[in-house]
Amino acid sequence: MLSIFNQAQRHPNSTAILDSTGEYSYGSLWEKSSQIAAYLLEGQADLNQARVGFMLSPGINYVATLWGIWKAGGIAVPLCLTYPLPSLTYVIEDTNAMLLVVEPMYQGILQDYALEKGIRLLDVNHLQQKKATASLPQIEVDRGALILYTSGTTSLPKGVLSTHANLEAQISTLIHAWEWTASDHTLCLLPLHHVHGLVNVTCCALWAGATLQFLHPFQAEEVFSIFLDGKVNVFMAVPTIYFKLIAEFDSYSENQKKALTNCMSPFRLMVSGSAALPASVMERWKAVSGHTLLERYGMTEIGMAISNPYRGERRTGAIGTPLSGVQVRLVDEDYEEVAIGTPGEIQVKGPGVFASYWGKAEATQKAFTEDGWFKTGDIAVVERGYYRILGRDSIDIIKSGGYKISALEIEEVLRSHALIKDCAVIGIPNEEWGELVAAVLVTEAALDLSELKDWLKERLPSYKSPKVYQILADLPRNAMGKVVKNELKPLFS
Image (tube, rainbow, N blue to C red):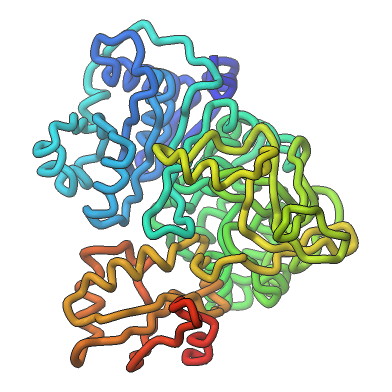
């Protein structure tokens, strides 16, 4: 049996999930996920790593479906709830998913497409209307478990395939490092098609036997209301969420502020990740909550690799030291390790490192050195024993609101517009979002930006759509014809 299921077997009466529909025990979660597994199998003995896409709101149905896919021997492919149809179909077709599990509210988005492609579209509520039983397969940990999509330096996202062994290494490392226990109660606000929300929060809580409460969609006022209930003691978010919570806090009366600070100060742990945390936000949150946020470093491909300590000094602007069982080195362009205090690319080894980019053998090979180190593309330096991130070796990756966004992907979409001759997409610093997506356009004729924004809504998720624009007669290029993006950033200062 997979280790993540252990607590459901040991403590079936403990509360596993709280969502907008109610409270569910580990025993109930176990039963619901087994029933879903039986329906997915449809008489087969084993899904044999078939990819199963699912588009579900965070809550009991989401977790039961995830577990059901794993129990049936499938590979889980979470679909983003805010993606337009072209982005969804890219993931479905890239993974060749022939099963899709959805809620009624998302069924209309995929129904015609699924019918056209001959894909089974299953209503998650129908799967639980009547009991179904099946003999479930024995799942070995070297099987594929999960495909999450991340934008790299190519124009299209890549599917990151992790095995059950990879996930168990990632989760157990955090259980140990951040001292998760069954008495913890955490609130999840994060998207579940990313490692932060799915692994760091959801899977860690379930592995530990803790209570996992979901709030969807995010509402700052509701977050504080839940905090005041006095049950939550572990909280993880991205810098953008902390920024919004601070703004909400500042709108309250002095008595309300005092009550909130008093209820947050006993929390066991507060974590920030997925983007660099501005020092101003870190200091302000400390005044608001009494907590020095724990910053850590990870990626979809590796889980978490480096973390500030749970017990010990948490330094502003630093990501900490390598986690137990994770090897980290900083290297120069020749992959030679650099001296302490010298910047270098972070490279990682360990059992949590992903298996492959789905269907992309060449990209997988290029992601590793000959001796097996994963090349993160992030530049860091070690200062007084702690790692500090300096930036990426590619300007084509934008970190905004906890997302890592490919500028090249957005450029490809923009270039498909009839009036756009050329373009360049960059990230510009922003305290709330980390970086804002900005676009510089070369147009064939006058372009109405409000119409362009409406056009993009049908082709890109909102978090990938540019927030600010500039129009130039031409883009600056070097001798090789490559756009010099650093020359564009002053346009937005």
